Length: 520
Picture 1 (cartoon, one colour):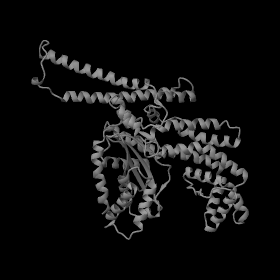
Picture 2 (cartoon, rainbow, N blue to C red):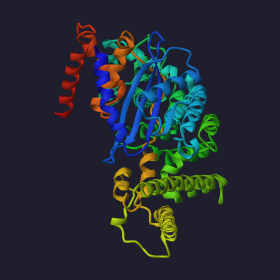
Picture 3 (cartoon, rainbow, N blue to C red):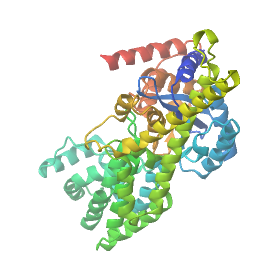
Picture 4 (cartoon, rainbow, N blue to C red):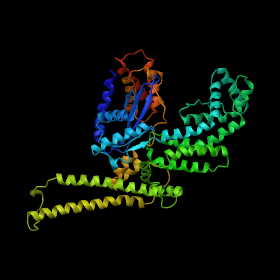
C-alpha cells in the first residue's frame, strides 16, 4: 500500500526533528478539489545543524467541513502532536481567513499550558503576506474590471484556434512585434497572473487593433483610452508584482524581505494618492484603504527579522518609521522594546540551561582541592555565591551581544546569505545566533490563495493524494514548485494502468527517474 511509503517518510523525519538544533516554523494552507473536498497542508520550515534552510511538507490531509476555527485548531493540533514537535514551535503562518484567528488563539492556549511558547505567544501568528497582497490588489483591479475582462476575452479568442493564432502572428509581423513573446491567459483568482496577462497584451496592443479590423468576429478589442488605463495600472502594480515574487521564493529565507518591501509599497501608495491623474488617484486610494487595514501596522516579528540582516539592522527600522510618522515614533519604540525583550528571553533561557548543567554536574572531593574558609558550611555558601556571580557575569556579557552587533557598521547592500552570516557569527554572538536561527526560518508568505486540485488529483483517494505530495516534497524539498510537481506526477500516475496494490513501486520508480533527470 502507498501508506507504507508515507509512513517511511514519517519515520525519517522523527529523528531529524528530534535533533533539530532550534525551533520549527510552520505554514498551513487550505486546498479544494473540483468536487469541493477539503484538504489541509502542513509544512515545516527550519534551519538544520549545518545552517541550511529546510522546507518539508509534513501532511496533505483530508479536511472535511466545517472549516471553522475550532475544527482547524483541532486538526492542526493533532498533526503537530503526531510529529512530536509541539514543544519546538516558534511561529505559524496562515492566510487571512477570520477562522484562522480563532484557530491560532486555541493553539496558543495549548502551548501556554505546556510552557513551550516563545515571548508569551506575541510573535506566534503570522499572516501570509502574499495572500494579503492578493486581496489588496484584487480590490484595486475591480476598478478596471471591464477592461480586464475585455483583454481576457481577446487573449482567449486569439488562442482559440490555429487559424486565429496565424492571423494574429501576421498582425504582429506587420507591426514589427516579436512573435516569440507568448500571450498569457490569466487565472482570475491570482492577480499576479492577471498582471502578466495585461503586461503581455499591452505589448501586442497594435496587433490586437489590426486583428479587429481583419476579423469581423473579434469584438472585444479595448479602445485607446482603455489601453492607456491598462498601461497606467501596469506601472502602478509593478512594485506589487516584484514584491510578491520576492515573498514566494523558496530557496532562500524570505522573512527579512518583508519590512523593506512593504515599506516600499507604503511609500508608493502615499505617492500615488497625490497623483494629479484622478483615475490613478482613485485606484491608489481604494488600494490604500485595504493596505491600511491589513499591512500599515508592520508585523512585529517580521520587523525584528530585518535587524538580523546586517545590511539593515535596527537603524533601518528607525529610518522607516521616522519617514512615515516622524521622529520618536511610538511604533518604532514598540518594535525596539519587543526586540530587547525577546533577546533577554533567549539570554535567560541560555542562562537557565547553564545553571542546570552546573547543578547536575557533581564534583567529588577527590577531583577538587578543598578551600579552607572556615568550615564546610562556609565553603559551600561561598562556592554557591561564586556560581551565582559567574552566571550573572555570563548574563551581562550575553546581554551586550545585541548592543555590540547593533553598534558595528552595517554590511554593504549587496546580495547576502543571512544564514551563512550568522553561521560565521555563532561563536561570537551565541545567544543572538540562536535567536537568528529561529526567526530567519519563519515564513512571511507561502501562497496567493485559491489553491485547487485538478481533475486527476481530485479523482484519487485522499491517502494517495497525500502520498504524492509528501513523498515528492521529501525527495526534492524546495527544488521545484509544488503545483507543477503535483501536476506532473499525477499525470504520470493517471496515464498508467495501475491499482493501489502496485502504486507504491511505480511511484518510487517515477520519482527516481525524475531525480536522475534533475541531477543530470
